[in-house]
Image (tube, rainbow, N blue to C red; front, side, top):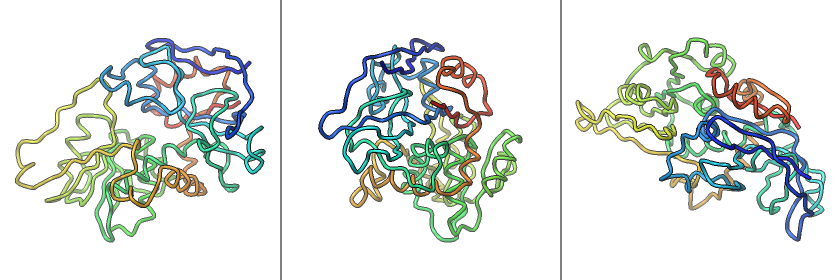
Length: 319
C-alpha cells in the first residue's frame, strides 16, 4: 500500500492509503525523499479558497479528486526512481506530484536533479521555475531599476535570481521588518513600502495584497510595467486605474507558470524551463527559503500550523 495526503475540507486533511502498482512501459516508480509545502496555492487549497470558476485551471498535474475537495493536491516532490527505464533507476528526480510516499508516473514527467543540488533545496524547483517564467515575462534590461513587492516564497525566489542581473537598483519590498534576515541571506536590500524607491522600470508584485499591488504601481516610472504574480483566490482586489495610471501609460501583465512566457515560448519547452530551474538551485542562497520541516506522518497537523504561520516560506516534508 502507498500513503498520500488528502485535503478533505476547508482547514482539514488526512493521510489515506491506496493500492500500490508496478510501473508499465514508459513509466517510473518513485520513492519520495522530500516534498514541499508553500504558503501560496497549497494553503489556498487547504483553506478551501479556490474559486469554483477556476478550479479546473488550478488542477495540479497528478491531482486526484476535484477542488475544493476531497482532493490529493501538491506539486513539489523529490524522490529516487526505484523501477523504470534503466537510465533513470537510482537517479534522484523532481516531479510535480502531490505528497505521497511512492507513486508511478510517466518517465517524461520526472526531471533528474543535478548532483550538486541537495534533496531539501530541490523541492524549490517548482517555485524557481515560476520565478524564471516571471523574469522571462518581465525581461529586465541592463541598468534597470527593479522592485519586488512581497518577500514571500515566490517574491524571494524572484529576488534571488534578479540579484545576478546587472541592474542599477534592486529592492525587495515588504511590510514585515522581520524579513530583513531573509533579505540579507539572499544578498538583496529589504525596504518598507513607504521608503521604497520609485521610478522603477519593472515591478514584480507577489504580495497577494491589494495594498501591495497599489504600491507597486506607484513605484513604477512612466511607461513602466508591473508583473503580477499574486494569486488572490476568492478575493477581488481593487486595482487603482484612476489618477495618473493612463497618463503615465503603465502596464500590468499577468505571469503564470502554466504556460511558458510568450517571450520564450517558441524556443523553450516546459521541460527546458524546469531543467533550468533545477540547475539554478545549485546556488546555496536558496536554502534561505526553507523555513521548517516535519515528517510525512505529521503533515495533517503541520498544514494547520502553516496556515497560521505567516513567517513560513517553504516547509519541507521528510519521508
